[in-house]
Length: 76
Image (cartoon, rainbow, N blue to C red):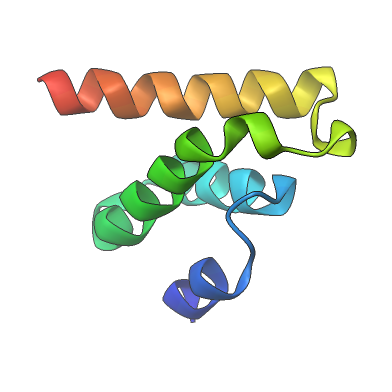
C-alpha cells in the first residue's frame, strides 16, 4: 500500500515530501529505502523546475531537511 502511494504521487509534489516525512517519522523508512532514494534523487535533479506554489517556507524547509538527511546518510 505504501509503495503504491510512493509510486503514485508525483516526485515534484509537496505531498510526496509529506509522505516521505511521515514514513520516516513512523520509523518504517527502512522498508522503502529504494523508493525514497529514487524520489529524493528526482526531487534534487528537478528542483529548479518546481512551481512557485511548492516554494512556500514549510515546503522548502521540508525539502531541504529531507535532502540533507539523504546526503548525510549516504556519507556514513
